[in-house]
Amino acid sequence: MLVGISPLLSPELLSVLYRMGHGDEIVLADAHFPGETYNDCVIRADGLGVADLLDAILPLLVLDSYADSPVVMMDAVPGDELDPAVENSYRAAIDRHWPNTPAIARVERFAFYERAKGAFAIIMTGETAKYGNIVLKKGVTPVE
Image 1 (tube, rainbow, N blue to C red):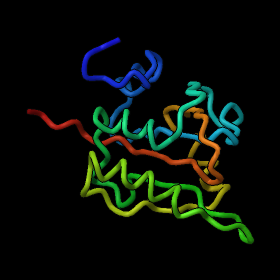
Image 2: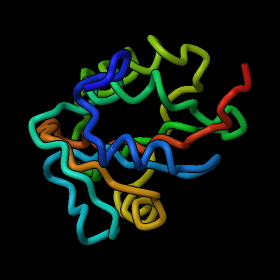
Image 3: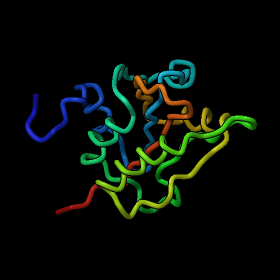
């Protein structure tokens, strides 16, 4: 246990966050996501919801201020509907830590899968909300 770092963050996840570089992406995937199919670096965070994990990660991870969309979610398949409460809960976590972040972008399902292939890592959560997946693009850590 470390002071000032959420106990929701495992040593493996902390290592991934530390090793990511500017422009690298991390996927916080819902429990339905086929993580092992799309990426070799998969970390389990079973039992954790994405919004809670965002609150744990975002104090440590700067979002990319040079990207038009440093935060991306999967769009609904035609015929499905999105639950706005899911995005609202994610946005609330983002706004607590990085309030100037642009609106969350949406990408088509298979485009999201392609993006996951190139991600630095996929974090498999216990999130059960449909379309509960989100991508974060890491920015440059400011020098104090």
